Amino acid sequence: MNAIESVNVALDAAPENRGYTIHIGQGLLSRMDLLLPHLPGKKAAIVTNTTVAPLYLEKLRTALAAHQVETFAIILPDGEQYKNRETLNLIFDALLEHRCERKTPLIALGGGVIGDLTGFAAATYLRGVPFIQIPTTLLSQVDSSVGGKTGINHPLGKNMIGAFYQPRLVLTDTTTLATLPDRELRAGMAEVIKYGLIHDAAFFDWLEHHIKQLLARDSTAMNYAIRRSCEVKAEIVSLDERENGLRALLNLGHTFGHAIENAMGYGSWLHGEAVAAGTLMAADLSRRLQRITLRDVDRIRCLFENTGLPVKGPRLSPDRYLESMQLDKKVKDGAIRFILLDRIGKASLDDAVPAPLLLETLSACVADA
View 1 (cartoon, rainbow, N blue to C red):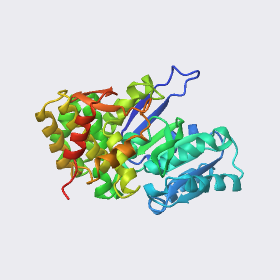
View 2: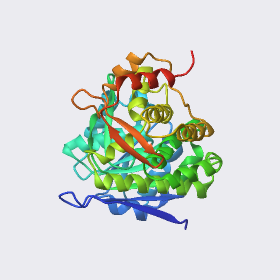
View 3: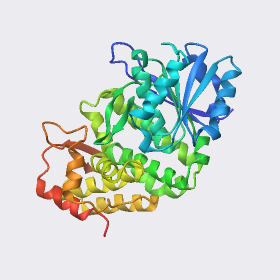
View 4: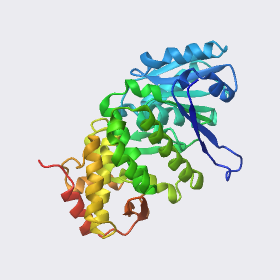
């Protein structure tokens, strides 16, 4: 039996212990001993998409059927552009048609879009039903499946409608990365790099030295990168579940990145690609505020370039960036709040960025025409 690594997400400070475990390893789609204890009944809904379903849906359904668990599948279209209320209603339609009850769990089998949609449906159907994450992309395995953020996009802003709703279990089968397109793998690495930048300088150093192995999908390197990313996120989420302060640091690069996604149209840039460009913008702004050095910025740029990710945003006007950034969830009293770097390995929240410096960054960090 393949080795399994586990990371606990501790939420003991809540009225009741809603903590859960992230299991990481190869072949976990067949490990019903890990999944069955979190199924309260003998019926489950599996939410997936048209890309993942042909690869892994039948394997999961067959394994559950061997333990007398009845399942039905809800297969959604694939893509960020479908993370909306129309697609969400397809989940509700299926749950109602199958007369699902409060103990019918929803299992998210897919990437970040599937996880966010399924989690939001679970949070709101019958005012809350059990929810399990089985992430199949690197980005979802290191980031979106952990922490309980769920939601949908709105034409005016990304992830502006949603709920905090924790899964009962995260089952990360790293063998699913074998079928992940290279572009998606690189996009997921943007979130991995983020953890080193905000919380662990030694991990950032390790990534600089092991990026070739990660892009080659070396299992030992990949398992470590996933586990360390989950450990950092679990630590932060356990201290600030609902993003009242510390958890906002997980959004390094996202204020700029979400603006790129919104302005360019959801799905044009992958989330990780937008976050990569946004992180370089945040680094540039941090340098202009004399928080980090030019050498720090060069190190960050070099790692993203070696990962094959964009280091400049699309050529949009500063006004267009600012318009989209005003819709960021961290805006407070009309002021955009930024996650900036104090050094590699430490970030902080700043709501007093001088407008001239921000405009300089927006002008300097876009691609040439």
